[in-house]
Image (cartoon, rainbow, N blue to C red):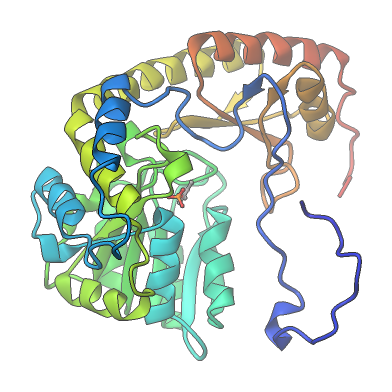
Length: 371
Ligand SMILES: *Cc1c(COP(=O)(O)O)cnc(C)c1O
């Protein structure tokens, strides 16, 4: 992975692809993997039994239900919306890609507020759109005056809000979200990959006469990252456009079944979420006790900043001790920052113990610019 190809390109790639880098997240084989915000829990055993049993009854020789009607109806029922207001795809990343193919593309502008989830800008650029990045405040909150200024100037076709925001963990308030929807001229996309871990969701703002969509995923809360399933809830006129973009039968029958059955286990999912929220509190306290700056999080991860240590050396020491977290220290405005996913209690203990050792052995941060 991520290695230079052995043979140079024989055919030139699209001009605008030359400066593009792919998405990189280390997949290192360690005991404790706390770097990609998955659920640490296996799915409920009863879900797996149901799934196994019903897989046998799938019409394997036939294409799947192209409209994923039953899955969408189950999602719509859960959220109390119309089935025509739900669109499902292979992970919320494919939902985002489909949205951007329909509403962004060449000659159009997409606005993001940094630091935020890198794939929003990445996918927008792949569709040929221009990306304009506004900046969050020093504490990573979203400033409405900055939003107003950026969207007034850029006139974006799509404006992204990520709540809770990855990688900072911050949840946007209803007031901020309403102001964004009022100010932005195009479609507002609220990426809620982590919404179940927070106290407020923009789902309640979705309406036919409001250009707002909310994207969700089964990867983070549903213990189903391996299955790749995500969806959005939004006005039916948006869903109708997205259906023109996706490939025929893009969502396979096994996955439609997996998602439909998962929704029978909402109680289990919610129990797991509350366990992780409790652990998040414990990890936050543990980090503060180690004298580390912690950013408040409404997600299943915590961003923290090492003011006095070389963050890359700390990250390496953690890996040496069998604990993998995300090194964000090279990303814009995240100097000295690492992000840890909340795991099982024993994993979180291992992380905190390893970090205490890493802070002892890692060199102090050199003063002056290092990057
Ligand atoms: C993980 C993540 C996603 C990706 O979700 P998939 O459904 O696995 O594609 C989308 N948005 C944010 C903010 C994420 O952190």
